[in-house]
Length: 203
Image (cartoon, rainbow, N blue to C red):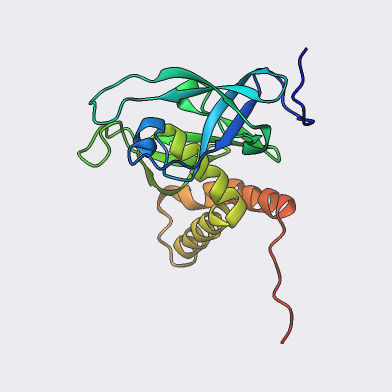
């Protein structure tokens, strides 16, 4: 197997991000990502000096266009490992981080003018949280963000507080809130064990 001149940890079929800066005004549309943002790719093979990657591109300004494969030789220093899945490569829309399964959940109301491909939400171990997303891929990314930045934990705390209020004020119809509390508290304990809340230092 050929290796690049510089030592690289990559192997063929590895998921990677390509850090690409372009002066082309339509580059963001071609690759489907913002200017300067890492572009999802897949390692094809290692050359003597560079790494060949596969990119998925779309022609700009074309409605309902299909992703097309493009091979490109790049410097290994512009690549970094990619954990999150990419829909353009038909990768399963699921990611596991620290034992938490991250997916997207599609709202059953169907399409809307704002979200023509359906309204998606982040799902952490099957629990939905976060803001509405336009795609399943974006929802999976949002799920990781919610897990790592406290959005998932905050949503659980809010849900627990609401159900405890129902019970305390006699508004828990048919005992639904009481039935849901144990699972919510178990989820909270699990996430706080994996990601302990930060304590602010005393002034």
